[in-house]
Length: 396
Image (cartoon, rainbow, N blue to C red):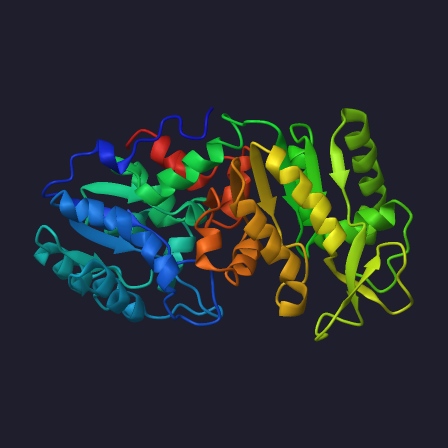
């Protein structure tokens, strides 16, 4: 089954005078509940489309900040500015107050329900909770790929209760872009893997190795594969549980003719909080030194693949990006990716966070930068996401 098979778009539905329930998200869990203007801006297009079509919009989201479920009042305030209209926020997402606000909505008005995360029934996929939410809706729109991987009441039970349901514009855009790495892949295909989690990066590379013409590896997996090849990485972060599998992966890539490009030089310091670093050959580390970023020669080797590539899929920063000292090569690679004639796709929360340090002009020129975190990877891996399957299903 193709990624978009059986899924309708909001543009295919009649929305005039309808109560349109839009299940969205405001970004990844955070340490605070401050709205991010960029992420909020991505929520707007589907809402504006529904409003222009004459709908009454009921907006719902689940927000966690530091493990807590804060009020969505700051989000309502900022959304009102972006939409240039009032955004009504009842004191709960269910109950008499919410019902009254929704009943009083007129075409062109928006109600943002209070945080779904305040009710454990949401995460429990509770049918009764979903039916309460359903009482506010004539049409259901899923506009969150990030939340679609969870079998929650509002994303899994609720859409099955309404015949009129579809993807929002943001979700459609995400899925359409991901089809260009799966069903519509143009080659040469270059995979770029990095990040601090070597096991995650290893699985990512394994998923695409058979189709890739080249795999460019940095981060902890780069260190680990260098160690698997016999190099002493000294104090560098290495995943010892992957050494044997790493040798197997390198052998498999060789047999398939896939070019795996590992760091030939690295940026070295005594620890991740260092304020300066020096480039060393990857086989020339001294005791106590750590590899914390790819070096300039490695970046040149990575960059040599970009003009040839028709499709580039990148997951994971190339260095310890939270320290600007070790973010330089990641940001420069992003700039180079933004200039290619092929289609670049960036996935993964850490990659997204690293690119937040780049100029907007750079990220806006990259073919597609996913905001869906792990969900986009699961779609690329061919997994079925509960929220998407609910959209495909027949109404009960």
